[in-house]
Image (cartoon, rainbow, N blue to C red; front, side, top):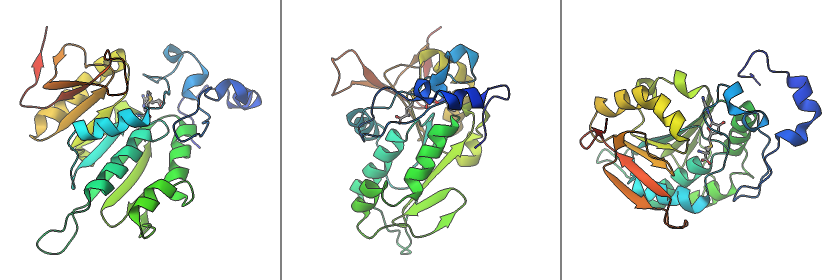
Length: 247
Ligand SMILES: C[S@@+](CC[C@H](N)C(=O)[O-])C[C@H]1O[C@@H](n2cnc3c(N)ncnc32)[C@H](O)[C@@H]1O
């Protein structure tokens, strides 16, 4: 397990794991060990703590992003994989599409996570059949069809992959996501602006959805209040055609 910062004292960390276990449970009940929540963010390369995206919000974000077969959905800072799982579930719900040539349109769900404990957790989720119960149950026929590198192909149509990597080093043109769904803090979104802008303006049809926080100074194409919230929290959608910068 690679540690993201060289001088981090992993032995001391391991001796007192209770400090490094998130104090809440995700919707799936799992309590996950984290590195990111172990010390103040400013002393780390992380731009957001680990807070699992509520299931209802993750589902709503997929609807809002108008996910369809063939999309490559990427979560920069995927935590314990809640948004990835919602993306897979959404894709399974809307079914695979056959092309006229009888081949399947493949969708991809890719998570980027720098915290090695969280990355490992998601890696286990997507490769262990028991933890994948929900994903696979929806799939009917236990869809682990082939496995290459870290990726798992579900139902011929959905490939799931986790990359243990710093968001700022991800080559978006290599993975070519069509949808980015981000649950990060405003300062982190601000720091990501050059990367996000370059990605968004390169091609029509790309959609950026942020949860709870808008990208600072950017005018969203549309917003939607979170169904599960008090009306103060929103989803924000950005596309190339409607991108306006307020300065
Ligand atoms: C609010 S959580 C996101 C939760 C997640 N998207 C979900 O589906 O529930 C933010 C995540 O971003 C990760 N993160 C923060 N800075 C990062 C960085 N520079 N590179 C990669 N991951 C990062 C954190 O470790 C944390 O898991």
